[in-house]
Length: 78
Image (cartoon, rainbow, N blue to C red; front, side, top):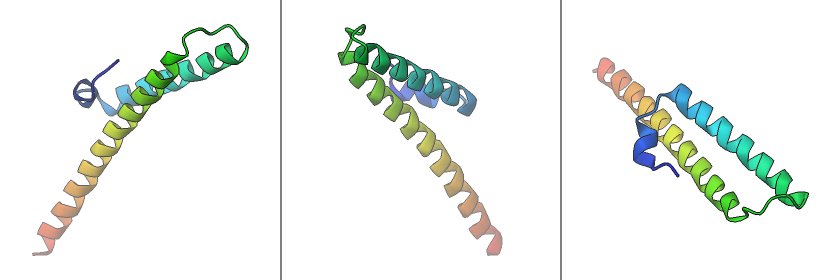
């Protein structure tokens, strides 16, 4: 399990890659459980939380970029 602090240090490309691998793992685990092969049902919740963590960090970064852009645009008007 990765902490949000550690995720914030990653590049946007690394976050995208991490998100893709987590979603792929979640899909594979769902199939395994549905076919009766999976025994790690608790891992479903862990994966969903980690995906949410990665998406939150991505939104924070996008929001910070947008805030910076708007602030710069406002300061140019003055």
